[in-house]
Amino acid sequence: MTDLLDLPLPDVASAVQRGETTAEAVTLASLARIERDADLGAFLHVAKDAAVAAARQVDEKRRRGEPLGKLAGVPIGIKDALCTKDAPTTCASKILVRKRPGAAPDPADGFRPPYDATVVARLRAADAVLVGKTNMDEFAMGSSNENSAFGNVRNPWDRSRTPGGSSGGSAACVAARLVSGSLGSDTGGSIRQPAGLTGIVGVKPTYGRVSRYGLVAFASSLDQVGPFAADARSAARILEVIAGHDPRDSTSSDLPVGAYEAACDRPLEKLRVGVPEEYFAEGLDADVSASVRAAIDALAAEGASLTKVSMPHTRYGLATYYIVATAEASSNLARFDGVRFGLREEAAGADLQQMYAATRGAGFGPEVKRRIMLGTYALAAGYYDAYYKKAQQVRTLIKQDFDRAFSNVDVLLTPISPTPAFELGEKTEDPVTMYLSDVYTLPASLAGVCALSVPCAATPARADRPELPVGLQVIAPAFAEERLFQVAAAWERLSPFRGRAPARAS
Ligand code: GLN
Image 1 (cartoon, helix red, strand yellow):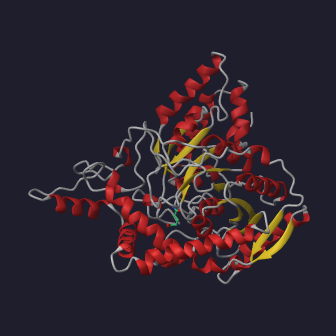
Image 2: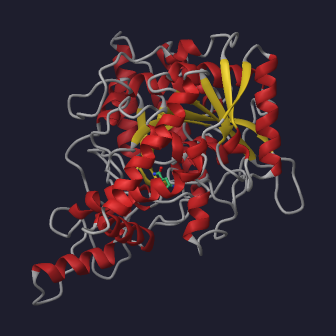
Image 3: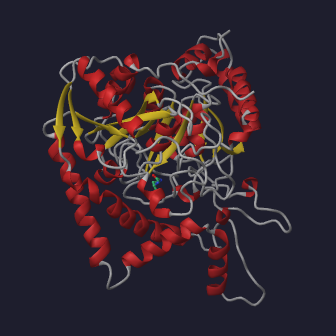
C-alpha cells in the first residue's frame, strides 16, 4: 500500500472511513515518522498514548457501524499556543513551565489547561487524531521559530535553514509529511510565511471566521487560527471543520461557513486578479519575483483577467503592525505573573512586586520582553496619541486600500516573503531585519481580510543555496475564503511544484 501520509488528507480520511486501513495504523505511521525526524524539532510534546487511544476510539466507532467524521483517523499537529486538556500548553515559553529543582525547564511540566480550545474540540469531534503540540516562537512572536525557549525548528528542505515562524513546527511537520495537517495561528503572517518557506499551503482566515477561544492571546484584534496542509483541498477540509460561530468568542462571526473543498473544483474563468505594484518593490529576491510572476501569468493564461492595482499605504504596514501588535501583547501578557500559571520565582522574604518582577524576568525570553516594553511605551500616557492612536488611524487607511482594490478585482496575488528560507542565525542579531521578512503578510492581517500561501515553485539551486520553495500569496475580501481555495487549487493543477516534497532524512 502507498504510504497514506504521502497522500492528500481527504484520501486518508476516506481510507479510514471505508476500512481500508485503521486510524490506529495511520497514527502509528505518523508517530514513527515523528520519531524518525525528531531532529527537525517540530514537536514540543508528542502525545503518543493519547493519540493511540483516540485512534482506537475512532476504529471502535467504525466497528459499531457509526458514521465517521470528515477527519476520520487523520493525524494532526497542534501549535502549542492552543489549549489542549490532555497535553501541556507552553507557547514555547519558560513562563508557562513549572521549575523542578536542578533540572532544565521541560515542556512536559507545562501548563495543563482545564479545557480544549474550540478548534481543538472541533477537530476531535470530526474524528481527527491529535498527535502532539508543535514548536513555535515564544508567544507567537517571531518569523523564524528561533525565539522558542525549547530549541530551533529546522526546515525539511535544508536543515541549516529556518522553516519560518512563528508556527514553524506546524509548518515543518506537514512539509516533512509527518502528519496530514496541522493548526497554526497567524497574527501578522505566522501561518502564511512558514507555509511559503516550507512549500505547503497555509491559510489565514478572515478575522472572526475561526474561534479564538482557547488560543493564548498575542494581539487580540489580529490573531486568527488556521490550517496547514500539503495541498489546497486538504487545507479546505480542515478549515470547514474548525470555522464557524462560537458563542465563547464574541468576535467570531455567525456567517455560514463556505463550501471550501467544493471551491477547489471551480474554474478560474472571468476571475479578476489584481497585482499590487507595491508588493514587487525593492528588496524582493529575483528568483522569488520571477516565480511569482510566472505563476500570475500562467493563471492569466487559464482565463483570469489581470489588473495592476496600487495600494499606497502598504509601506506603513510594518510600522503600524509593530505598534498595534506590541500594544495588545503588552496588555495580554500581563496575566503571566507567577500567580496563576506555570513558573513562580520567589526568593525568601520577597514581596509580591518582587515575585512578579523575578518571575517575568526569568520566564520571558528577550523578544517577548522587547515587545512588552515597546507596547507599554506606545500605550503610555503622553505617547498614546502619537503612537497607538496614530497606528489605528493608519490601520484604517490600509484597510481602505484593500476596500478600493476589491471594488475592482476578486483576489490579489503577491509574494509571501521577500526571500526564500534564510539560514538559522542569519537575522537574529537585528530585530528590524527579522521584522522586514513580514512586509507582505502584515497588511492583510491589519485589514482583517483572508489570505493563503500556496507553493509556486522552487528556486533554482545556486552555489550559496539549494532549491528552496517559494510561496504565492492569494488575498481575498473578508469571508471570501472560497475564492482563496478556487485560485490555489487552480494554480496547483498548473504548478511546476506539484507533487514536490523535501527529500526524506535517511
Ligand atoms: N512575525 C510576526 C511577529 O513577529 C508575526 C507573528 C505572528 O503572526 N504570530 O509578530
